[in-house]
Picture 1 (tube, rainbow, N blue to C red):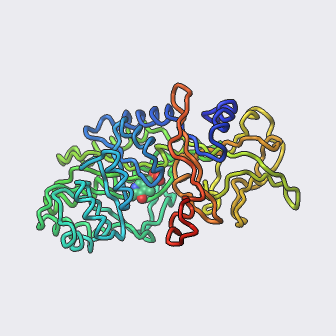
Picture 2 (picture 1 turned 45 degrees about the vertical axis):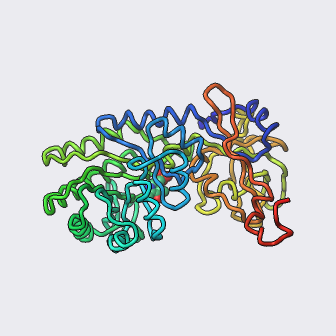
Picture 3 (picture 1 turned 90 degrees about the horizontal axis):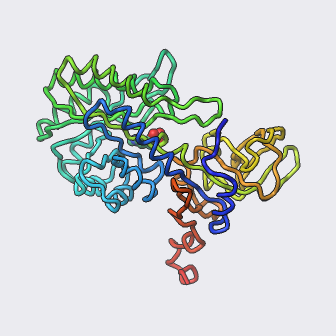
Length: 418
Ligand SMILES: *Cc1c(COP(=O)(O)O)cnc(C)c1O
């Protein structure tokens, strides 16, 4: 059974100050989970997690992760700006971008970020725009299908990312001739993997690749970036991945493939979902019922606050706060207020009998939740609140106001902020 990290009483207290809907995050859970990750990879000197900023770009949350030893993985100009303002510099920033504009490379170089090239043609582009650094990373795409135990987990051949195997060898040679002294390799082949095998299988692919490239070119690989992709159990019947088992699986591949060859790269990760999804919830209140061909429970949040169900049909578990132990003997579609029929947090969901004013806790909203929010239908993005380990809470992003919505219309006098 999934349990929210916050009680009804606490939410009632918070809602007096900050009306629903809002996202709430659990500092204690975030810190414990981050420590578990670092512990699982402590066998590798220099292991580092570069939190994927796009998952949850909130300064307070990223500062917590920074205190736990994380760097940041950025993929756009504004994400780099956020990294700079939060005090990240140089090797603490990974820049994993694609279709990258020149100004992003220039800015990434200014910050001393590690640049992860997504394509071989970007070597010339980077040289002309920002110059080639001495350390660089290449994103690999093995093509074909990516399988684990004969199960197809992803189809890299259809993915827009990364260099082919022959391009990897050619790019390394070209970059060496242009003065690169240290290389890293990166790949992201399947998303939201809740099996423990993803990283170990991916690590094997990358370790064998760098062993081959090193043998042929003499290039020095100083890190292997396993990127994001460790999943979280969105459904109650799914099991949490075991990060210790994952860390040990990568270690085994490392020892088998690299130790005998005298190659000893650092292991990097760029997890987003795994770091924060379970430690964030969307809090919304039931405001209407509708009885037509189905039973609808309308709430004050909508897909603008959490769009995964609307765009992926993704399952997000819902707990009715205060009714944690009540029988789930009613069936509802839990819906938001967008003029879009996909705006449903849950379809045919078994829940306890709902009443107007009930607070719903929508689970696993801590990553790819608020950050994917949008302003369709003139909806305003919600506040974000941090629940501290001592039970107190803090506003870490205010809710948008109509002035924010109209901000880009300030070219018209009647829309200027009054
Ligand atoms: C999205 C992304 C991540 C994070 O992915 P998760 O599924 O949140 O772990 C990491 N690296 C890159 C390059 C990404 O695009």
